[in-house]
Image (tube, rainbow, N blue to C red; front, side, top):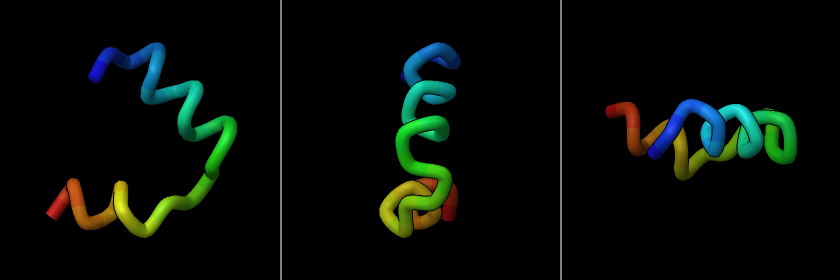
Length: 24
């Protein structure tokens, strides 16, 4: 995933449980 898309996701959804699982 590109930083740009990542930023857009953070702006649209400040917190997404699924993203947290991806970091683990």
